[in-house]
Image (cartoon, rainbow, N blue to C red; front, side, top):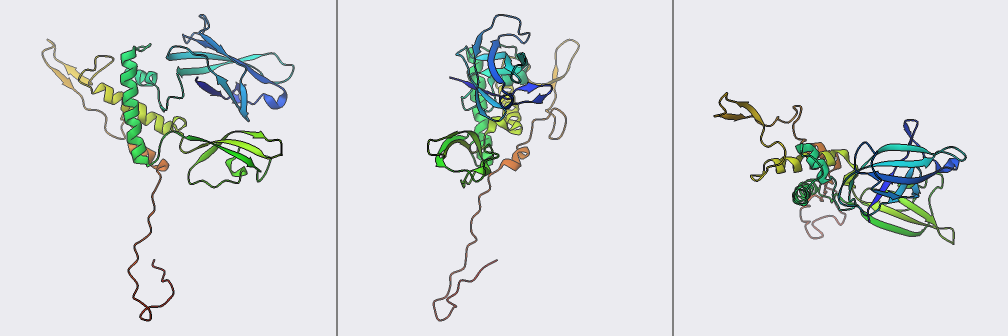
Length: 287
């Protein structure tokens, strides 16, 4: 089952209705961006994961792109309002930082996709992800982990990973927490890089997956190679080169992901010490 984590929007800002007695009630999915056709599927009410974030368990629908409308009550006693900013490429939770529909957008391929197109685009997304993971020296999908029976360092910001007595060698975020009967907490974490939430990674993977599809010899959907000129009789065609790095429309460079790289440190090799008494018994610090 796919899930969707939503941050409600109200009056042009992210808003958490729970502290004011409100709630996030319903998600309706539509097959068109006009959102005026029949409802394809519905979900709700949402579960509040943490401040400002609500999770929907999505219904089972055919793979594809859907447009959603969220209905929620901002505060106790107020009328329901709607948030029509949701667009979902389903299913989610497949270990992909981008969707086949996003690749189709980059190629100019109309939706919906065929099963063959979806399989080809998914393959190229995974290939691009493998290249990024090798460059960053870390996986692009987080690992779920639960801490049990822990006591927070402070209690005024339990969504902050620093509030919990844990030491990790990687980034982590708090998904949700629960109070146990003895007053301690069980905390659900996502440990590691969450590539789907890093815009630079998503842009790189989608752009390079689309370019790989475009360069396939069997590519027949959407625009292929870039044409610069055609003779009047159509007897000759000239193709333009791709924009170079730094030019508008160029593919993102993998160097744009440098801030996310995991660096590996190795100790400097020390020269062998002479046996006592020809050397000091103290360790010498080499700089």
